[in-house]
Image (tube, rainbow, N blue to C red):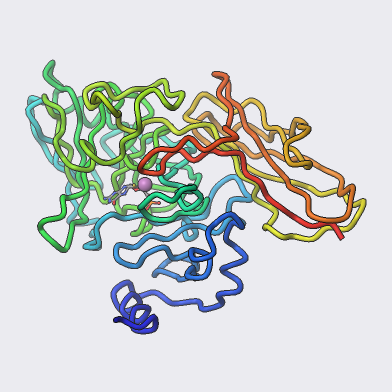
Length: 405
Ligand SMILES: Nc1nc2c(c(=O)[nH]1)N[C@H]1C(S)=C(S)[C@@H](COP(=O)(O)O)O[C@H]1N2
Ligand SMILES: [Mo]
C-alpha cells in the first residue's frame, strides 16, 4: 500500500506544485454538509501558477476553489478550479500550436495558428460562468460515484476570443453538418481509456456566444485552464468547454465518443431545461446541457459565530443557464420565512449575479441561513435533491448553520 506521504510526494513530483498541510484550515473551508471522510482527506495544494486549492485527486488533477474566492464578481485566474479526465497534459507552445478544422460537414479543411486566431477574427469578450456538471456531487445523499466535489468546481470569468461560427464559416459549413466535435491536447496514459472529446449540436456551435477563447480576465489562459485556447459555451455546463483545443471536426452523424454518447447524461424530463441536444438523445436519457438555477452564500463559513442582536450581512452569488436570475430570497429561520435579497449590478446573462441581505441574530443558539434563487423563466432552486446516477445539477437550497452567542 502506498503511504499517504509517498502518495503526496508522487503527486508533487508529477505536477510540480506544493502541499499545504494546514488540514485544520482546509477543513474550515469545506461545506459542513460534506461527509466526514471527504472533509478529513481534503487538503490544500498549489499547482504551479495556482494558489492553494482544495485537492480532490492528483491523477488526473482535480482541484476546487475555496468558497471565499467567490465573494467577488470575477474569480481570479490563479484560484480558478481545475478539472481533467485524463492525466497526460502536455504544455502547449503558443508558437507551434495549431487548430485543425476538418470533417465531412465542411467544404475546405484548414489550420490556424494562435496569431491567426487572434488577428483574423473579430475578438469578442464577455463574462460567463464555467461550472462543472458535477459541482456539489459530494453533497449527494445517497452518494454517487465520481469526483466528490463541494461547491467550488466553478468560476466566473471574462472570456475573450473568436466566435466559433466565424472559424467554421471560413471552412464552408455544408448542409450535412449535424454536430461539431472538439478534441484537446490531453490524453490518457492507457490506450484503453477513451480520449476526452465532446460534440455540440450544430445550432449551438453556430450560436453567436460560443467562443474559441484565448484570454480569461484579461490574461492568457493559465495552462491548467486550457492554454492556449478553449471552447466557451455560455449557459451550458463546462463539460463542453474543451481545453487545449487542437481539433474541430464537423460531423454528419451523431458523435460516437464515450464522453458524449455515454457519459454526461441526465434522465429525460426531470430537469426544467429548454435547450436540447436532439441528435444525442436516447429513450432513457439526454446529454446535460444548460445549467440549472442556483446560488451560494460566499462570505460566511459554516459554524461562524455572531453576537446576539447583531446584524449579519449575508452575501452571495446566483446564476442560471442564461435566462437571468431575477429573485434571490434568504431565510434565517430554516425556511419558515423568506425575504428578498438585494441584487447587485447585472454583468450579463451568462455571468453569476452578486446579491446581499441583512438578517438580525435574534436568538442564542444555532441558526440556519438559506438562500434561494429564481430566474426569468420561472425556475427556482429545489428543496429536495433531484437524484440522478451521475450526480449532476445539484441545486438544492443551501443550509448554512451558524451560531449566535
Ligand atoms: N481538454 C479537456 N478539456 C476539458 C476537460 C478535460 O478533461 N480535458 N474537462 C471538461 C470539464 S468536465 C470541465 S468541468 C471543465 C473544467 O474547466 P477548468 O479546468 O478550466 O476549470 O473543462 C472541460 N474541458
Ligand atoms: Mo465537469
